[in-house]
Image (cartoon, rainbow, N blue to C red; front, side, top):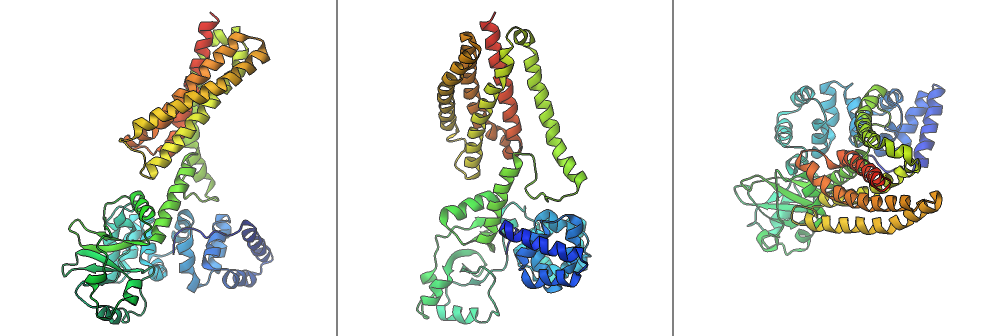
Length: 456
């Protein structure tokens, strides 16, 4: 089970919302309760809760039956879940998440304020509390923070027959169990054996004879994006997590990795607009205005910077009015070229394919592409400017400026992500704003500067 929403068809979501709105407007709470609990699954209910304003969300949540509430909570997005959890007592929350899978329980607790976490932990039984506290001590964006401690381990010297009898003693195996982890008497990881291999092996065969010792364990501090890359590269379904001393502590399963990939994709998309990937579409107005105003303010400062550059060439603009008409063309083309390079590099960094070892080759490639595209389109734009204003000098000015700006844009788009990352700034969040500033300033400066020289 994941903490992301199910992918409902938009039409289905809207139909369910209309039916619920009709029932609520008529005061038919019993009908609304039936629609929610009898006709919809937990992921569907969570999807609906995330599709309505907070006031209506509260009403619908109160209609969810107690035996479904935990599943619905697990499927809600982070902000929507935090809103509902904030109204629950610690004892009530602890009881609600008792049925959560261990990793979902950790995900929820990591979202809560520390004071609330402590209260919820106190409401748990001692064994659960110790397990949860151990995982909460690790960075949530690391293998330790992602891992699940529900694992089945076996010794290498026992037979398959013993393993099968051992497995049958479980009332149910932990979810997503595809592998048994092999440890020695000091609980140090030594290998893995697939359940399918156990089922088809001779009962008298020892685990040592059929185990796979090439499954590399993950260390506790492995970053979550590296974990995702490992799963993708090796087509893993699960992977062991070990301590610095090699002791097996838990496992990471593919459902957790899918969440990491989804969160990373959402972050890249939303970050370009300065938004939080977990933002509730019906978040409180004050909260939303505050979030968005920060990036609008930053953009305003960069706009003033670009305007200041234009102001340096006021006399040239007064002399050749056509320059004001064509200025946005140069800046816009540079912005697109820079964004293309920026996107390629950010994606490459996220996939572990771009680093200090190959960044020089990538810079050379992107700059050559920028210059080539600049030369191609400068001919088109230069010719268009000449035909439009019957001024060959103007055609030369915009053509030269476009080649220069596209080359600089490609260079900036390639180098910016690495520089921002070295400054502990998220490239997905700040890269677009900084790049736009560079392409606007350079584009205006080149265009108007060249025009000043050529019309002098």
